[in-house]
Amino acid sequence: MADDVTIRRRVIVRGLVQGVFFRDTCRREARSRGVNGWVRNLPDQSVEAVFEGPAPSVEAMVAWARRGPELAEVTAVEVTEEPPQGDRRFRVS
Image (cartoon, rainbow, N blue to C red; front, side, top):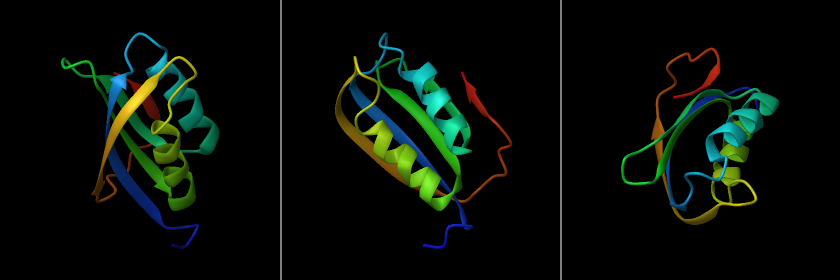
């Protein structure tokens, strides 16, 4: 996959992922890699995120989501490919 290709991935992360600074750490990780999109908590205690940007950076964020921040205990990650939508920043919802 070419480095300059923009891709978008939606991830649902399950496990102990709320109340462990997952969203804020995700925001910092995404911004440091130049990835746009968003992250939010879901009612079922999982976290949903969308990562959009250069393919290597987005894939690095998907890999990061598989482990999360230090206090997280990730048990499953669902990844869905989506067409890029032109997100211009990363935000926490």
